[in-house]
Image (cartoon, rainbow over all chains, first blue to last red; front, side, top):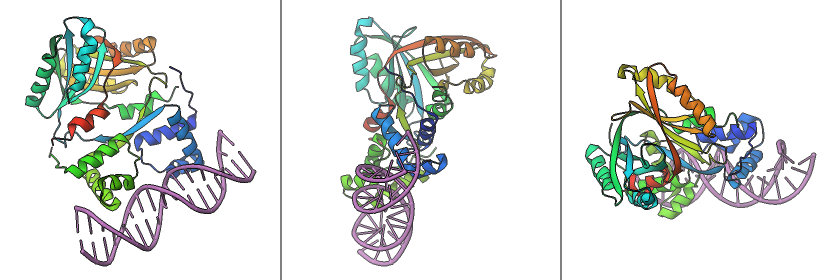
Length: 159
Length: 159
DNA sequence: GGTGAAACTTCTAATAA
DNA sequence: TTATTAGAAGTTTCACC
């Protein structure tokens, strides 16, 4: 995978868009003392290069009634079942991320649920997948960081 | 935390915005056969209620040179150190999310690094935090889901 | 609540530098 | 690569359903 070179202006454009994707290009332009047309061209270039894959809303899940987060480690009976199990996991709503991992677990995923009852249902669904030997759950008591802030302060600055 | 009631129109507006935050309100309006003004009012209401906390770009980290993802479980010498350690973790760039968890680990975090060398540096930093007894790393070989898609298909539909 | 149209702001693509 | 500009497009407000 090719590494794309961004200059300082690109970084600053990304910083502003990461903060708020609907910020007018004219605001970015003013802030960087270049024209809005240039912002447009640069953003388009980053989109075309695939650096910017898209945009999404940040929602308050607690307010939406989903305040339960847990990580579930999955042990398989046999690693050859990884792909199959992963596909089944993909079918389960509320599993928000899944990884094939080295180390203790074969598969590792994050779930977001309404409450413990709801989480139990989800975990039982995971347990019931053919090929899953057992699972191990870690309940999040508090989430303390988020990707968004990190993006600006670290990911881009030294590329 | 109050649970906010969204109707079907709100859900559909969110679905479209989650897919692409810069989709014109006029497009949403056409698609739902209501006026753009109404879209505007409803989005504003959801913003004011805090349901919509913000928006962010989805970037291709691999293209940016950050293709390494790992989860690190942290064992503390004493749980009373949780807050202190969490604060130190917050200072470490490339740790993208951290949770206080029940179960095996006291703290659980996700890191995003350039490569294994870089990841090693980050993990050593975590190990060096005062109060950290030891860490356990799970390297992601493949990330197979993402929050974004999940949001639409599951989180909202039954609220 | 929602609408539709007016007033205002922003985007975009082409041209020029 | 960047700036300018003008027409197209989108947003916001508001009087009225």
